[in-house]
Image (cartoon, rainbow, N blue to C red; front, side):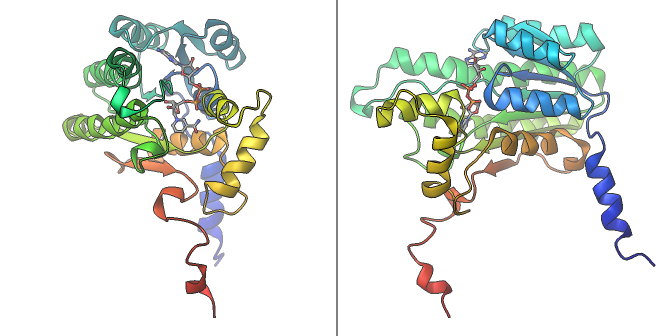
Length: 285
Ligand SMILES: NC(=O)c1ccc[n+]([C@@H]2O[C@H](COP(=O)([O-])OP(=O)(O)OC[C@H]3O[C@@H](n4cnc5c(N)ncnc54)[C@H](O)[C@@H]3O)[C@@H](O)[C@H]2O)c1
């Protein structure tokens, strides 16, 4: 008997396309984590609609993966509805909704917080997610074949002090609405999960670090190195966009079929322990 037979079978399954024929909509898919996920989804056999406000980037990426691009400001419900409609008119179905668009928003003291700025951030980071869940749910319920909705939260939802107040609020609220939606939509076979990235060197994080360190030309490798050294239990191992894309692929695929209302934290363990080394004497001997 070949004891490795099941391992080989598993490996074959993993190397095969995992989203064959599925239709996915990705908000904030023009660059960063969303773009990496769009490419990975397409490599796994999905038909991908990219919805973003960065039209040139989004359209070029969509062409390169034989997908579709739609201009969509997620803070506007009508834009999100139109993006879902594009998926439906293109392929007749929507199987995967990745609500990923987000902005980092204003810094500043809670004592001086500007409510108009806070509301602008919430209109994108939170309302955008609600618009996405709502319209994906309508399409999925109507088709009656279930679906997978994934929302991008953040390590900032788990641990305070990693981001500004408004952003932290928005990302924790996403966990709430995702769990609440999962509670209702499970009856329709629709799974709703979150992914929580941490320290991924995209434009969002780079612009923050450039300002903070006063280095305009700071590159992604430098930021990844900083995260690997300061923000990860995996010594020297910082995050990549592909780390998050693979987590999203799992949540999108049928392999995660019994997982809903879950938050998949992709943080190199950072939010699970105070530091990597402070108590290291415990492991000696
Ligand atoms: N980079 C990180 O370390 C990190 C950590 C935790 C969570 N996140 C989250 O990951 C998601 C993706 O961010 P990223 O790191 O790839 O940054 P990014 O800035 O590269 O990507 C964000 C994308 O969202 C799009 N977007 C912004 N506002 C939009 C709007 N109103 N409508 C539609 N699209 C809009 C942008 O154009 C961009 O394509 C965000 O929700 C972010 O909060 C990122």
